[in-house]
Amino acid sequence: MFKKIIIVITLLLIGGALTLAAASGMIKVPFISPLLGTDKPRNLIGDVDLNLYKDVLTKGEVTLADEADKYCLTCDISYEDFSPMDITISSAELSSLLQATNNNFGPLKEIQVKLNDNNQAEMSAYLNLKDYGYDFSGPVYAAGSVVKNNSSGIAIEIQRVEVGILSIPEEYIKQGEDGLNVLVNSQLAKMSDLKIDLLEISDDSLRFKGNYPKTASVK
Image 1 (tube, rainbow, N blue to C red):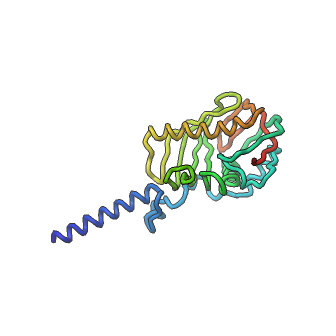
Image 2: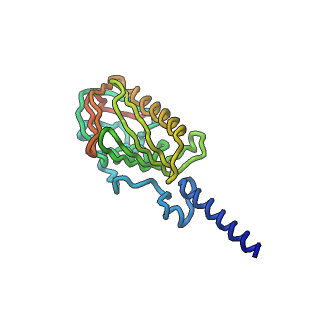
Image 3: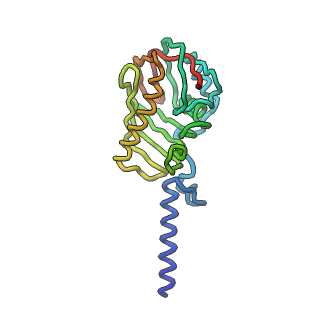
């Protein structure tokens, strides 16, 4: 009888450990990960049309000097030909653009962005930090706000982060928020004549008005 109890407890501990690992999304556990939905990034807007980003480039009259998949959030990009721009982009268009330019390079893959109201947005993606010295790869989700910080920068406030389906403690969210702001604004800093007059998120769309580069190339 005692041996049976030990076996049951052992199985429960193993099952609990596997469920916790699957819940984090860092380890794919057969049957459990698909059941929890942690085997891939959270689906925020449905299927993403990977060709939709071309409409964004056309609307903004932006030219990419290289193939779209050569660009990413951490890539070394140069910007030229600044001129006034007033453009509105939907969640589907922005998600398509981010996937077209990040799915091959950089730490974030399969990015989806859902634009809400009052400058609020949600993002899901597959994050791989192994090339940056951290032993982490898995699906992540974040919710927060994006606002104009000054005439050439933005401020991102992260209110909630989940790795798999596990919530991240507030102190780690703050570290991630600081890192993301540095990453995004360092890329914007390369745009010498960037000017943000308006940055507004509402009703499933992002509107930008200001001065923006019409040509981008990868160094």
